[in-house]
Image 1 (cartoon, rainbow, N blue to C red):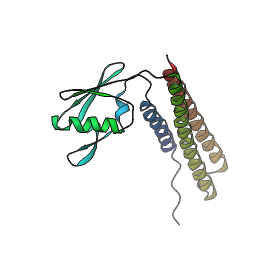
Image 2: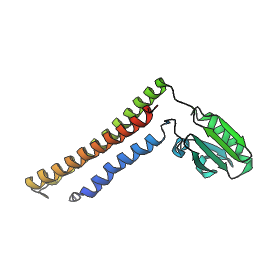
Image 3: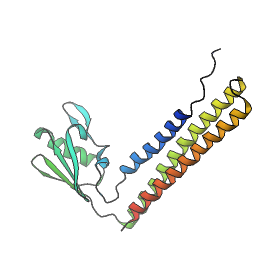
Image 4: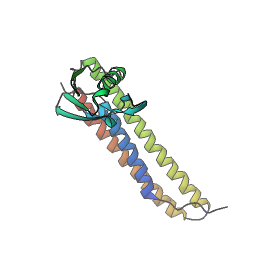
Amino acid sequence: MAAPAPFNAADIKRRMHGAVESLKHDFAGLRTGRASTALLDPVVVDAYGANMPINQVASISTPEARLLQISVWDKGLVAAVEKAIHASNLGLNPQTEGTVIRLRMPDLTQDRRKELVKVAHQYAEKAKVAARNVRRDGMDHLKTLEKEHVISEDDHKTKADEVQKMTDDTVKEIDAALKVKEAEIMQV
C-alpha cells in the first residue's frame, strides 16, 4: 500500500478560501437595488446555434449606480439578448436603443429586502458547510497520517489546531461578508 500524501496546510487554506470566493460570487448575484454586472452572470443567450453566457456576446457596464448597460456586439443578437433577459426572471425590463440595452434597477420593497437577506443567510450557511467539509477532510487526513506513523501524536495535535484555526478564521470571514451584504440589502 502506498504511503499517504503529506499534510498540506496550504491546500486546506486554498480550499477554504475557495468557499469564501464562491460566497462572494453568490452575493454579487443578489440584487440589492444597486447595479452589478454579476447580476447578469446566470443569463444565457441563444446565439449562433449555441447557448452562450451574455458576457460572450456583449460588454456589460454600470454607468450609474442603478443602471446596467449592455452593448451587444452583433446587431442580429439584440433580440436574443432581450429574450434571454426576460427568460432569466430577474425582474428587469430591457430598454433597447440600437445595439445598446439598458436595464434600470427597480426599487426594492421591504418584504423583498427581507427575502434577499434570507437568501444571503442561506448562501453564507452553504459556504460555512463547505469550509467545515474541508476541515473534516483535513482532520481525517491527519488521523490517517498518525495511524500510519507518518506523523507523531504531538504533530497531529499541532496540525489539527492549525486546521481548526483556519476554519474559525474562514467562518469569521464568511460572517463579516454576510454582515456587509445584509447592510447593503437593508439600506433604504
